[in-house]
Each structure stands twice: as C-alpha cells, then as structure tokens.
Image 1 (cartoon, rainbow, N blue to C red):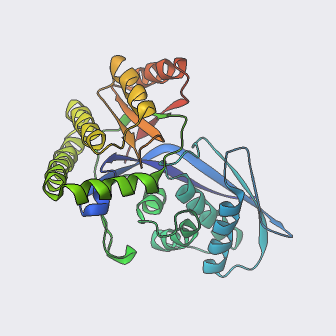
Image 2 (cartoon, rainbow, N blue to C red; image 1 turned 90 degrees about the vertical axis):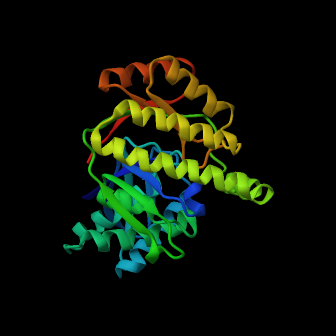
Length: 300
C-alpha cells in the first residue's frame, strides 16, 4: 500500500486574537499521522482513532476531486497524533492523503500543490479554514501567521528555532466548542472595544517577544510569555476548569509555561518542559490526575 505522512501542530501564541487581525505563532510537532491506501470499490476510512466518518469521507472525496482522481480507496489512518481538536489532525490527514495519492499515481507534487489539495480536503472539516493547519502539516517548522481577508491573502513567515522545544500536550476530556468561544470573544469586544483593543496590543507584544525568544533559544522567556498568553485568554473567559486544572498540574511540576491551545472551553493544553526527561515527568503527573497526555517536540 502506498503511504503518506504528515505532522500535527499547536498554537504557541495567538488563539482567537488572530481572527481580529493580530499575528499568531504556530508550531509543527513531531507527532503525526500515517495514511495508507488500497484501491477499493468505494471510499472507506479505516482507523482505530476517534473520527467522524462522514467528515472523513467528505474530505477524501474533495481531495480526490481536486486531484482529478476517479478511483476509490480504503484509506487506513494510523500514527501517534491524537484526533483531539486543536492539534491539526484533520489537516495532517489531508496532507498525508495527498502524499499517498501522489505516490499511488506516480506524480510529483510541489509543496505548494500538496498544500492546495489538502486545503480543499480541510474544507470538509472546517468549512472555511484559515489555512494555517494544512500549511504547518505540509511544511512543518514554526510559522508566524497573519490571517488575510481570503486564504490567498494569508501571510506566513517561517521562523528559525534556535533549538527544539520539549512540550507536553494534554486533553481536558471535553472537546473544544470553538464556534461558541469565537462568539464569546466577539461579545467581549462589542461590550468594551477599548478594553479589547488593549488586550490585542498586549497580545501582539507577546508574539513579538515570543518570536525573538524562539529565535534566540530563551526558553524561560518563552514559558513566561505562554503564561501571559494564558492570562489573556482567561480574561476573555476561554479557559475552563479542565484547562485550568491541567495547567496548574504542569506548573506545579516545574513546567516553564502552560496554556490552552486552540479554541478553548476544553480541548487541549500545552506545557513547556526543560528537556525530554522533564517532559516525561510532567506527562506522567498529568496522567495520574486522569487526563490523557503525551510528550512531543517542536523543531525546525
């Protein structure tokens, strides 16, 4: 069977503020998905991961259509990336699918083409996706992203990490209600435009300092900025009890920084560790409290 692979992502800085014109920093992680194909009489998604079959099949159909492929396939999904919201799993799936289909048809695709075809598949999962997830899944690395009025106007600036980061990703046990959280931010903004503008300014400063810290390897600074970012999303009412509990456990066990990643209101949190061994320790402590957790890396 022909195979394609792609990695997941986390948002290091920038949940929600990116919707309102501020930049965000997203990072590819070492955890990813594997897609293997076998020609079949109809399209099927075969996996032990938790997926929504209808959306997965729609994504497969869209990728096949945009690539001009008329055959049908059993699509086997494996890998160590959880399918929780906020980790870019659907985009990684689409990118891996495009790569596997390219091998199946013996065609060479540029990264730009892989990204374009995967974006078409992402539409099945997210309607009008920003493009950041499929871009990270295609290219990897660390990106400063600024959303445009259309996907074509999105701006991506790839950063050079001074050194890899060891992080721990933990699931709150509740899937993030992203649309609900987006509406909460809009409501906050409408009620106090001046306060919201101040938060955006504070956040933009976090991104600017975060970029410098990433490029210089200032791991303590990165952790402090993650905590500052978490304070801002908490002020907006986006961090629920599960998010707060995970972050509390991580920080109590020496994490340099901890914050939610993605939509909030549940979903996943990330914690920055001092090194790989420290990440494993944090992972185990969070697991002891009943949350699914795994260590991974951010690198170039």
